[in-house]
Image (cartoon, rainbow, N blue to C red; front, side, top):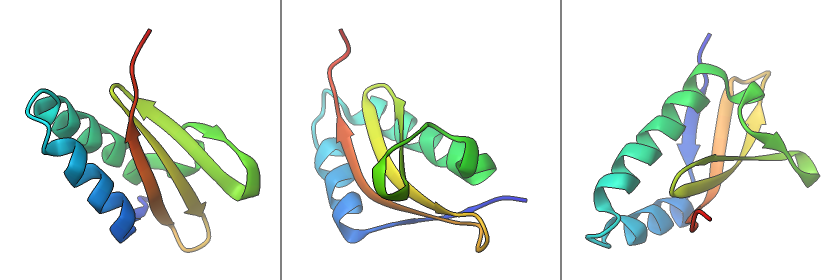
Length: 86
């Protein structure tokens, strides 16, 4: 059974800003798609747990914070960011 993934307006704006960078555009498109696919498949097991019921996950060059409501089978993404790999 899959999860419905919803993005806050703030997260959508963050993703759009990252996508506007021509050096990151292809990576941002691919990475955000992979992240969303993983959340749809099994958000409750994705990434690492953090405080206040949040979780984080990574798909270079993106990091994502999200909340999972297992009972409703819904995910809310409030924040996404780019990071530098070491």
